[in-house]
Amino acid sequence: MATTYDILTLDEARAAVMAPNADYDYQLILMNTAVSQRFDDLCGPVVIQPYVEDYDPSGSVFTLRHRPLASVTYVKEAIFGNVTTLTAESFTTPGGYLWKPVEGVIIRRNQFFDYPFLGRVQVSYTAGRATDTASVPERFKQAAAITLAHIWRSEQGSGNQTFGVAEVPAFGPTFSIPNRALELIASDRLTPGIA
Image (cartoon, rainbow, N blue to C red; front, side, top):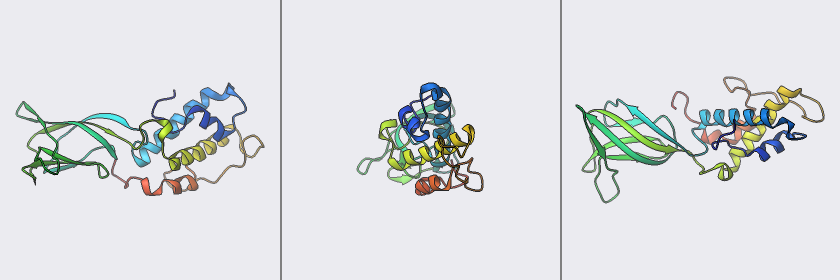
């Protein structure tokens, strides 16, 4: 069903596929959520979402599973059963960690210097670009609308007046995302193998 993390509102999804009436809403809602989740896979979360994850880092730096980072709530390090909540470093105050939003990394710090993690780490954070569906950047809305319309046409029967002419999908592991949609988000796509 529809989630608060969808890129398009139901009205935007209806407009994208030119749905003749609300009889198609259930299917449209499912497709909209699936398209939104696929864009999250390609680019990291579009609408900001919360995460709590555990890591066993080696060294002083590790990359979180989702980015770009919007905020870090806490970083806890467990060493031999003792859990310490680390404080964030600022430009003027030393702390136990530093976070980089675009790269999605956490760096263990001690007195403004990198310092190795010594135990298991738990991080609570949020990642994404927009606070809600209404504030999603236009390039994502347009790319999602193009993709939704493309999938809708293939499901409903392509080439008729209601659903338009089917577009040839991009080649490779794109899951039927048209090239023109991929071009809109090209600069936002995650590096392959890093998520």
